[in-house]
Image (tube, rainbow, N blue to C red; front, top):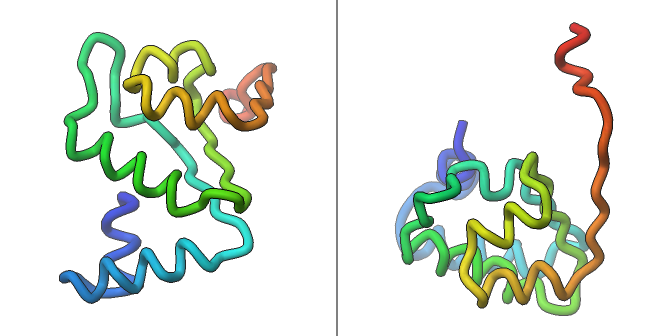
Length: 106
């Protein structure tokens, strides 16, 4: 299920839904975006509308904890996104975890 499908399942669809999501996103104590940037590929820039959604989501969380989880390295994320998003990501604390995949051992 995509993030959009999760939001639609939780809130429904339409402008009122978007406003409810924004309200709850702003008020949450902690927000986590898993698989951040996974639908953007090097050499294939993210569409401007998608970039704007990322900017809005990050801006709505200003001053509050936001965790972005990605399989991309910080350097790769820097290549995937424009300067506006890179500045916001690089302005936070970056923790890079390395090691063997646990999925390969299942």
